[in-house]
Length: 365
Image (cartoon, rainbow, N blue to C red):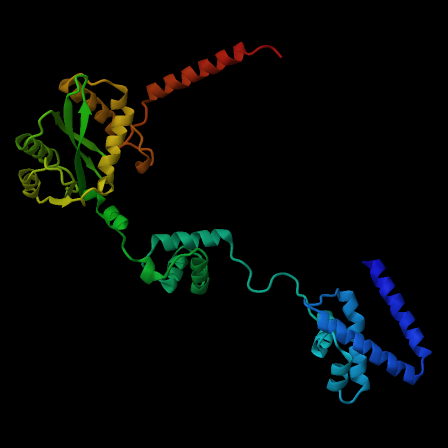
């Protein structure tokens, strides 16, 4: 690059020296000859001519000098410049002048970014108060001892894709169920094949809030009388529950007869039928069926109805009292009780013995 610049400057100086020894007539003839050659080049040109910046400088300087020497600037420039427009040459001259006088301030323009911890608090307060606007959120932040303007709150919400109050405060089906989940009970059937390929039907109930499962019973003939009896026993089981159950969810299985629904309706429990072929609408019950199959029934061969009843009773007891649930923060429906001090001391003693034994077995280094 530097070599090309030096060569270009040296050639330009030689051209000026050669022009100083020519007469005015010779200069005029050379100008006409060069102008005709430029017209030929311009007619043959098919693409836009791109030249480097260091070659633009002498052309821009000569155009400015010509502009200063002549009174009628436009016409001499248009006659002399063939490959480029006169405005283009003048713009080339203005660019370096503008860059010379451009002030570059230190740092990025605009207000400084807010603290990430403050933005985290704004998002948390916004999430906890979906029905509050920018100004009221400012007041909630002030209660926490945080001074922040509603404009900053609005900017943070827009940057994180949080819609304003009219769109954010709309109640969804999920939020509606979470508000009333303590009053929802679901039930369903699933089948088990015995060793002799006999089909047994299992009826169970599950609470939405606590995930507690109630095993109603299992039978090979789930007729209307049997199902109605299980419904009565379930209402007796839930009689002392607080808050009381208000809704029972089940599908359109024909085994759930009108008498079955009437038993619960007599206790002011409303029956909610899920849509046809939509098991996800009864997701809690469907998930428990998957759990009992994967964790218990798939590992056993069921002999008969009594065997199935005993196995399910043991699993339901484990499921309600000891099994951790992700939806309950790894707690159980009944609450996992911590081990007694005696059990804890025995565990710690076993761990210490195991650690000492491991150390003794390590080879000497």
